[in-house]
Image 1: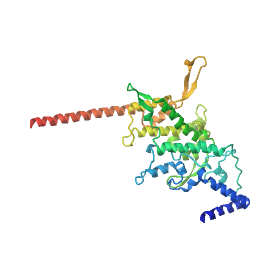
Image 2: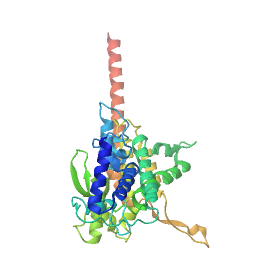
Image 3: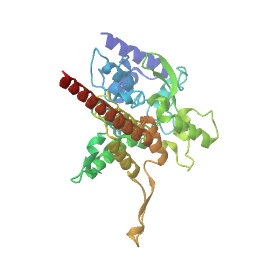
Image 4: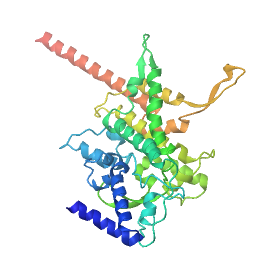
Length: 379
């Protein structure tokens, strides 16, 4: 059996390189084989993003979605405007976990990062933190699969269900659904990319691209497209005063102008990208989604601008309670508007143009009707 022969060769190779006994090598091989599926390592064999291993959809998200969207296949693929931003929703255990010494499991196994492989040196001891595997599963695996469901299988944010019309014809927020948005989407992004501290964005890894080629890049580059983080990284380099920092180094170790670690808030970037993609789809005539009216879009922005934020309270006078920093900053809102092409003037100019052209067309049709009617009377 080919599988048994492969396992045996792995055991013998392990014995040769580590000097352990055959029984120890057999245990090590069995343990490693048991980790293949849950850790995501087994999905590396899915080189064409077919998706026979569910982990493929997380580790090769863009390639999988493009394949599903092909005209000959017609599979579920989600909003096309978010394809390029989510190259990968997550990484496997060996890439996405560091030990107490700050080294990823892959780095320890291959003896270096990226294209640097050293199989001659003796393997270092891996010193995990408390419940590392369980925390990786809870914070990264479960959350990235939730994002996969929301971004690919369903309709992402459903903002049109968040904004309703009351009995007076006014557009208002549905507070219950707004809270569900906060508890669902925001938490999933935060836990997957910021709460899980075993993910080191600065690590160099040799990733397989969607065209089949391999390229060395940082984990931060591997997860998202350039539009997600370019301006974020640019500001981080400016604050650090070092333009030579890699994208991953800025995300992992950089700070904002206010001194906030960028890693703590990096999850907002893919979240903002997903929001921009949703708004873009709902402003296109050929996207297959219902087109949002300008008033709806502005109500959505009103929600985003007032959504959560730091609170300053006063135990002596509740009237002094206020929010001092919003979840989405004015710069964040500006970025979403620009990315989704939903700036205030663009929205209202579009409404004005549609109304004007609509009026001209109606006038033309009425004029033609009167003209044709006059011909009937003449004849």
